[in-house]
Image (cartoon, rainbow, N blue to C red):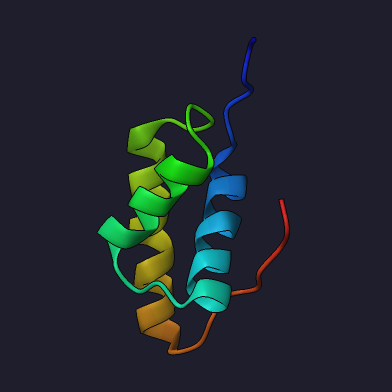
Length: 70
């Protein structure tokens, strides 16, 4: 079975959802849950980069980013 990898935008939206809906606030927790729920569907380096970017945006803006369902 071939699994299509998530795009950078999809990863960022997923991270935003974990923050807004689930309340996660740290890189390790978000990455762990992503690995459990979406095994093999993303590149680790891209996922970690997306998590860092969204967390940085969240801290700078002080509010959640829009949560788009994937």
